[in-house]
Image (cartoon, rainbow, N blue to C red):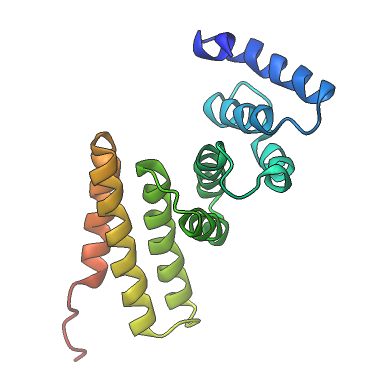
Length: 171
């Protein structure tokens, strides 16, 4: 842990790998190695596999559940797997878990998913608009919980507001 906090990410990654070799059920080692993998492009890209291995080890009201969902949402959002982000957001919400970072990825992915599904005509325009409105709610809660994320949230919020703006009638 001190290697991770001291900026020696490669050493920390190696330590977590050793810990997982010794105990393949070490939930926190999977989560923390996934975080390192996401944070440092020089490290092996194991975040998705680490989170997949951690998921069955997580149980309701586990003390590391929020950390897991934040990391899983980050990994899925970076891979443009918006349905996976929304699934993790729903699971975290069902457990009463939320954080600014998690809600940011929830709102951003909800907007992207609603837009894509609307363009493919998989949802009605009303459903798309409700998705956008819910995304704005999530982004605003994210900003309230984590004001330091405002520079990331504000452009997404403005984009959604533009998508919700009334369109001129067709000629």
